[in-house]
Length: 324
Ligand code: PMV
Image (cartoon, rainbow, N blue to C red; front, side, top):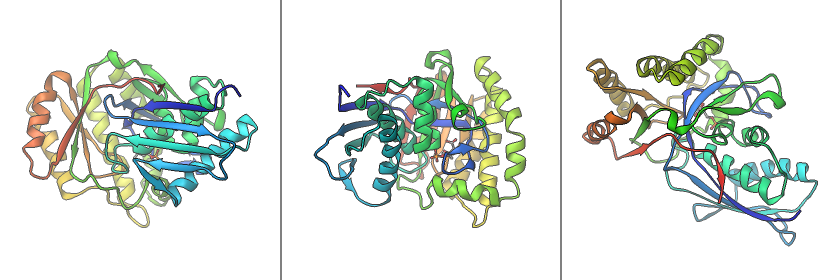
């Protein structure tokens, strides 16, 4: 091992075709494939130092020393890397995001993508992009999509080896913008790891999964052909389908706030009146408004007029995870 410390940066991503539910919870093998766009400007920066003097792993998250579940989850993940490197050395990890944590802006995706890259580099594992993506998936499913750049597809795969993400178009392929309307910056009550376990209890999940190949194809085509109307139709449908599954699982999960629904209706209405914008919500109440770059200024101004909206984050397509 030549090098024990490394720092990496990764962007979160917004899923256009969502991942919800696993075929295998331990391996985080998803029930369906998914497609996303990395979010430039937002990032997690993670430094990892493997130190033979440590007696356990430590995690400093946004300046706060973590002790409970967040630390346990990270330690379990680092065990995978230690296994690959055939070492038992503990690590000191320090991670910061420049955006709200646990609020449906994929903070765990950015964090685990950055951690995978930094830790693999620190241990000198020499992994390919696909291998890094597979590894990041084990930390947080959607993290596998924050390893490659731009517009990304995660193949559900048949087993661990075939479940990873690849770039289907670079960031500069399409001037799409995500204007994220923050209606609630606080972390959600039910995290996605727990939510994935409930997906199969919804009678709607099997229909959502069965139709996923059709939506994936429609989304892929819309991105490659830069067809905004087609993208809007499949993106809103897919978001609604995932939230329908969430709301009908046992126990039910409601991630929307009244303000989320208010904005969704407004955005659909704007589009009917010619503004190229559509909505998508991950596991949280904040509303991602995807639009063409020329409409971004107007979308942001309109969103800011709502008293329910605290802040609007504006993100272009982002690049891959990278070392610092
Ligand atoms: O990667 P996780 O376990 O945080 O799950 C992400 C789930 C959604 O954000 C709701 C959908 C997705 O595909 O990113």
